[in-house]
Image 1 (cartoon, rainbow, N blue to C red):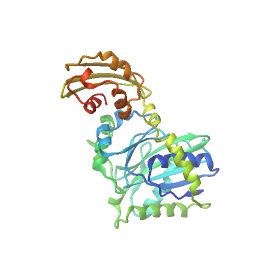
Image 2 (cartoon, one colour):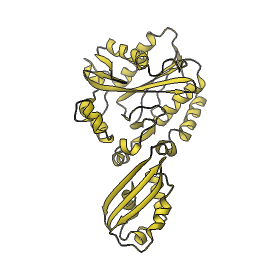
Image 3 (cartoon, rainbow, N blue to C red):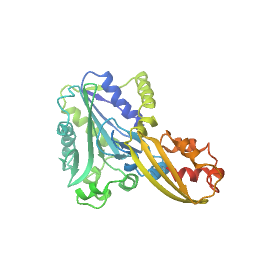
Image 4 (cartoon, helix red, strand yellow):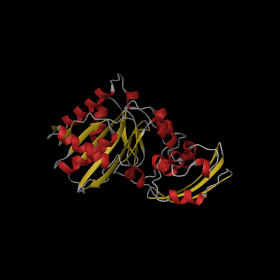
Length: 326
């Protein structure tokens, strides 16, 4: 098994690295890594129903869409991520226990009473500290998960729109009360880098054919280029959203703007605008101009530049008009 050394914290590059390893390595891999602050969407999830978008934009939180299924995850530099890649992709799909086992054994050696529960969670005393996801990719299996070590649970709660049905099914009232950090259960708390290296070492010690692997600068350049055309691409992040409808009513300086939007494959398919504002332009022009636009802040902002707010919406500035649509 290749034990991949990865000190990079760019979330787009880290996910691109997983794919690069599956394309270029012909043996099993293990990797522990960390992200800058980011929200990781599952492959089939709707960004706008899962994420508190205004908060994410205000705080500069990167949004990443994974190639794996599963739920949305908030990560910051208080999290450690782990990745297993298996070349026998068909055999172990949905076998979460095989890949979480080495992690659990390492934590128990540290004195942490961690266990596997439910469909894909790792918990301590009933509180979740790790979610896991898998996918098949070109005949191989990718399994990755989170390890909350000193994560900011306050920010996690603000960044995600957690569905009430999930909270009720767990018998709790907030996401903050349902999660925990591993550091809370250690007698002495090393810094997160020491923790990461300790887990890496423990998993390596129980692997008979372990071999360290470092990417060359040229290989890292391939990963970076891949991230720009893949995981950092807004078409991939937002264009993969399932179809959804939005009705948004906003009171602005020039009056009330009521927007009805249909969105499919991340793009506006239909829009209708109502309101009590005073404008001389034909709103049908705006509605036609937004059709086909990616439903993402920068794309909508650029599209609305063609329609001066003073002409179509009365006494409003461009930025507050953008806020009426996003």
